[in-house]
Image (cartoon, rainbow, N blue to C red):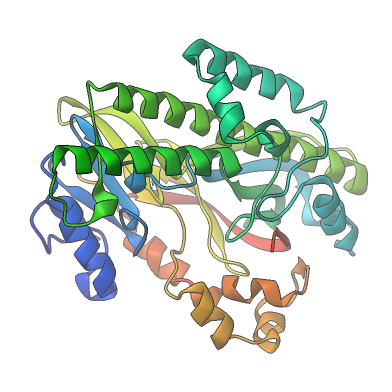
Length: 393
């Protein structure tokens, strides 16, 4: 669908009437910041979020809003296509699910008891980069367990799944980010940005729009920590995927991995658009350059997608990151029952728990509508359906 312009400096791929009022106000305030380059691009899965609307692309020149990047720096997806088909899997997948739950620490604050052999080279890579930046001691101070958290899932909407594509091919698929260290680094820099705004007497429509200006040491420190945390998130997903593939080979028989796809959806990077070098922050959005593969998950029990970017210049090569919440977690827990859980998760091997009621499809936007509204941004390559779902409470 062509983009809508319902506010100056805003292009939206979702009609205004489908956006909650709080998010509309947030989008308008963000778009008025003086360093926005051309316009904010609003995705079909948008909803209210801290600092900026989740499901938005924020192009800037000379400044970055740390809260608009998000507190789970580098959060994103990874998928691995195996050489197996559905017929190669055991009829009872409970052992696969339980093995994943045993191998991967789940839930907020959880971490590995020790650094795993597979994680060691990844941690050494992160330590080397931190040492080059002169930030290793700072990272250790921020989170003494960050090394043990490499290879852990987290909670909320993070998940691990075994899925089938339209040809019954088997994929492993997961969603996670930079864990505790990323969250603490984000909170640290959001606090610094707010202090600088107060020091400079800056007037903002919302305190969460506090920004860091290029050319300052505070900006440079943020970029260094941001890029390091994004690397942590990428390696965290790689580490979990390696363990999942190994345990699936043990439980299901030997197979090859024939394709891997990985993408961030909470991140900032330098890019060139309309002939200008700028910073592009995607909060709950993926990069979708022409031909670039990406991953767009639905909610628990619904479809997910492998997509190919169309390179939409107006969206700054951006596409949605998922279904997007339409209901708060509290409202979802009050609205759904375990009968709803059983009905919606029928046929999926899952840990049956009230802790996951706030992740049921009714708490999210319709992923099929999101994908329909994204047809000018991405092309669907594969459609996934879940057969195993693992989450942290």
